[in-house]
Length: 36
Image (cartoon, rainbow, N blue to C red):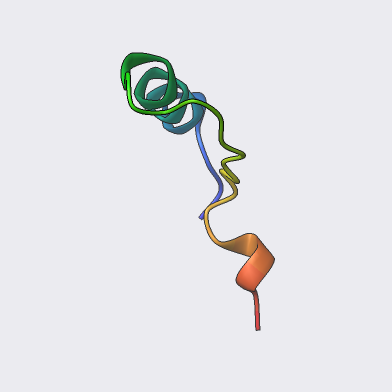
């Protein structure tokens, strides 16, 4: 499905709130890069 701004906001909130994360590239595309 096409993502919403809320989807991206939730991913960003997770990355900035998790103290164990020190750096990561997170693809937030709803799985489109795995399209058949």
